[in-house]
Length: 632
Image (cartoon, rainbow, N blue to C red):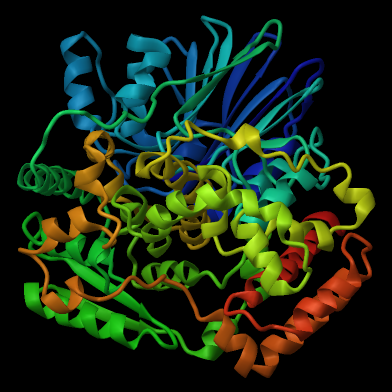
């Protein structure tokens, strides 16, 4: 688990101060070591950095101020093979192929055995070297063989190309800037902005989707000319003519027409989840399981015990989470594992609030509880934490999924929308409901965010007129059943939102989150199951509940679905510090002339609906995002 950065200046060599500053901006991702590789006029040299280990500094000179056309930067969080043999950038024996890699490959031992049988020799025990050898053997076809989370940069001097690649569901982020002057990439946007080729500019199309979905839909970001490499994708850059080609190395399997019994599906999922947990428990550092008290993470903790006699679990407790905490404690006692509770009180939740919000590189609609979870893991010396994230998307876990069948029926009455002429808030909500013509619209509505007409009323007309409000380019297959919704959940709820937030939260404190539910085999199997096995329209996660029955107490199995987040609405209503914080930032925002001040005041002063606070928090976090990345 690490952070990567780099640039390729097309027409001139630029100062290595760029890569030094980029790497410095993501130090939190890897405080254990750093390294550099630069290329100019046929000369290539490896360097150490100020944060490199002493052995690496003895091996490579410390990078100062060199000019180069290509530069790679690397930050290391040592998880597997803690020795200097895992140092990056890593070079092939002939120094023609150079790799930087962020992530973990869980099947690297199997791949290593296969590569050894093909004649490859290994100098380290790291998964990085396995990727390097796999690329040498199979080229870009290697990415489909990797089971894990990864963001990879490979410079292939023999084939004269540069390759960027990202894992199947985007568990590891990878952003890039492309212009006529060059290509710049990094694990976080804050590193891109340190490069002289990149100038921060608002991308209003990205902001628009952020307001509507609580996240910016990939490949867009809220920064102009900065993009997120889409999941399951790789991008190849020709080093001679600078031409870019993008391709996919994996597609989601379609549901099978074959008859499969529920019992068979449960047995297979149980087995595949066990295999995934076993692989993801492997590390050369301490591992913990984070339990929220719900089915997903508690099942992981339960099954982990059979693979490790000493499992550490912990739960983050925050206001109104008593039921989840009690269930987590009960479950830990039930299957006999060590369990600790980290209580986060109001003061702790509000501490460093501004800094935490600005860490996320785009507007956000919540307090991020996972930052507290990552900090606690760091303080307890856990570098690796297993998480239940991904189960909700994979197994139909969200409550709004249960509204799908009703919507499929009600959409037959969408012709009524043009006949709703009244402008009151209720009428507008009804009109919005009957404007959901396709699965993409239903998915948008389920995200509990701004509605299109609200975003339009908020944004100043001169800005809104330049926004492409036609979002059809984000549409997927549009299958009119659960399978169609599942695609959106996996691509936009999971890849663009949850694992992206997880990564930023965890890496802020140099912690690696792992996701046993998101193994290749489990995703492939569940997504290919017939729809009637995966989704019944009346209960969330029916298949996972069946799988968990023999492991978990009934209190956990029967607990209703709750989100793992701080009660922001509670803070807004009851904490003067939060209300003052909001008021201060809204007043700053109104002066920027981006949004209609009267709409902001109306939203702030007339909160009636249960989730009206979401829009307010999106505006506050927009203001803080703008302060951080655009004001000097």
